[in-house]
Amino acid sequence: EAGVAQSPRYKIIEKRQSVAFWCNPISGHATLYWYQQILGQGPKLLIQFQNNGVVDDSQLPKDRFSAERLKGVDSTLKIQPAKLEDSAVYLCASSFASTGIGTEAFFGQGTRLTVV
Amino acid sequence: RKEVEQDPGPFNVPEGATVAFNCTYSNSASQSFFWYRQDCRKEPKLLMSVYSSGNEDGRFTAQLNRASQYISLLIRDSKLSDSATYLCVVFMEYGNKLVFGAGTILRVKS
Figure 1 (cartoon, helix red, strand yellow):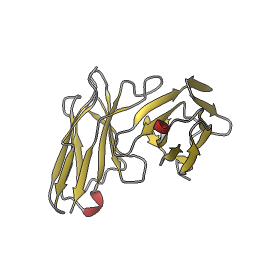
Figure 2 (cartoon, helix red, strand yellow):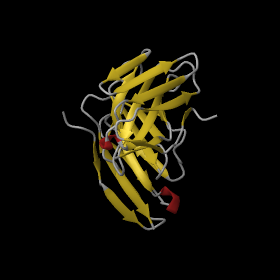
Figure 3 (cartoon, rainbow over the protein chains, first blue to last red):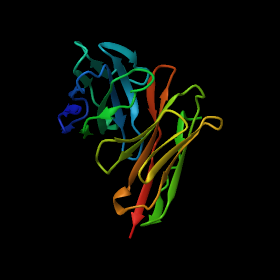
Figure 4 (cartoon, rainbow over the protein chains, first blue to last red):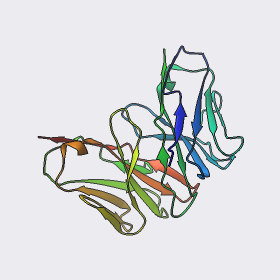
């Protein structure tokens, strides 16, 4: 079974530039998460989708971050404009269920963003 | 209080040792719990799921104490390859979201 696919793996941009990340979840997984992981910390949820609807985006800095999952499958996360503190690994994960059994998430390899 | 708290460590143990990590969570209504392993510069990978009182898989045992709101992970006969960060994850029923702890670093030395 194919896992969660993310691209690109690495990205270096200058502050104030824009960047976009792409994620294709495991087939059949309705729930999709975007997490931000800063070095030395646990993953922090940015946004959660259930199919193509947003379940939780309370920690997404909406003045600069946006995300969409238009057809309920793959998703993009955009940052515009980027700040130095956005340097982190952006992890996409998906899970089969939104509650009960099957809520464990499976992660892609992540995109390592460096803002200079 | 953080929703999920872990002792960051690092735990430095010799090969063959038994080591245990604890994790506390704030929401008593949470029903699903997980331990993930994360190697340096890699993505988190699911180690164990805990839906009832506990789970065991080879050298790894997870236990859940709902009354005290903590989950533990026990690793027996530690191997060098067990060196990693162990993330405690709680599925929060309110909002239906997974919340991660900051992780506990384990270093197994020969």
